[in-house]
Image (tube, rainbow over all chains, first blue to last red; front, side, top):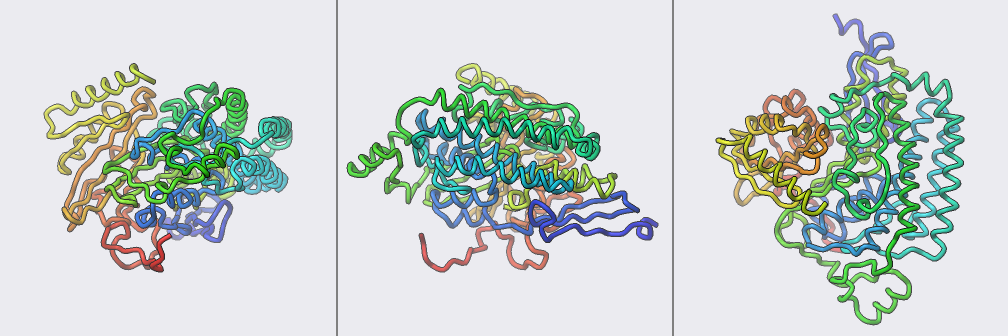
Length: 388
Length: 163
């Protein structure tokens, strides 16, 4: 009976919005009776490739799946690797890691807002989001030398110190973003069209969010105040003040508002980091002493690390390590098994988008076809990140 | 941080040991990771008990191939969202099974959050999670043929140039 009533609607895989994926929707009129995500179109075998690469070569590899959030992917991997090596980064490096992670969070949230905007038919928000993400891309470029794939965080520290005049430029950037957020409020967040499309749409209940293991802003918008930066603080987070953005509604609007609040909190963190950052080396003493004297002079003068030779052939002792960080889209976990050789025996990387993919079938079933983009966009789902 | 959080982890480890009393398991703690080794026959029972303690979701399901022992190791990394004290620790629920015909009960009934992770480990390592409703291809192409890619017998072809 149901076969006669319903038709199958295929959305994707040619880049329906945030990347290549396909949604199989079975629709009855314009009600979605069944929806299955079909993912894997951008699977790059990161876990298998990692078994053939040396530890230092894996840094650029794990960054690639999530272009808007490379610093957090870089950071999580290096934290796991440091546990294996028994190395810890000095305080200044911890602060520098934190600032880049937060800059990436702002960048990623603007990216998500922009994509969500175009999914709702607001090309203005798409243009705004993509233009305003440039601010943090530009600032990251000053700090790391790269726009998106920074490979900035290395075992034992970071590659570069703060460039001259960074604090002033950053203050300008943050003031600009503050002004812009007011515009977003007027044009998008309080817009009656936006609210009509998002409020009460795709409601994720608290107990379902927990049961399904949802992460990041999607979890916090359903009233669960879980944030790795608070629960198991790493880098400089124990010394910084910020609030975890939580909302109770669990609808698409709440997810957007949590992200906007997180942009504000990230700005608060960045200001504190620049005020409190301690002086000192940016690479662990264990590695600094291995840099030849001539290069060491360069390192001290320029604030740029010349890799000591040992980095090319890092051999962590036999064992395993697990790390978790709060990436922009949610909790990101790494698990590494070392057999004592120059490549990992097994690398497991579970990204926030992969954990959230279950939401498509959970939230969209029973909705109208027009709600598909509204909900999809609110999840800030990124196929390359999920497929790895 | 510091002593109090170490105490907390110890307390949680004790709580877990208590709830699993009488079952043939080994527990060890390192940093915030509490490892519970179980025989695969006891996996469901232990998982149910852990769920009862308050570990409400799976962060990742990881399988690793050990061809020399002809075994696969399966790890469920579980923790809690509902209880933020429990959230400080991660339980690594580990079990081993033969790699010739690896079968294991799916934990999807206990932890629905393991759904996609189990499906991924199924296609990447050839493990059959019995009772999983959708044990289909996930990330690999539909026409892929060959050994499960994350088994060690699958060799990545390279140009022979090591960077």
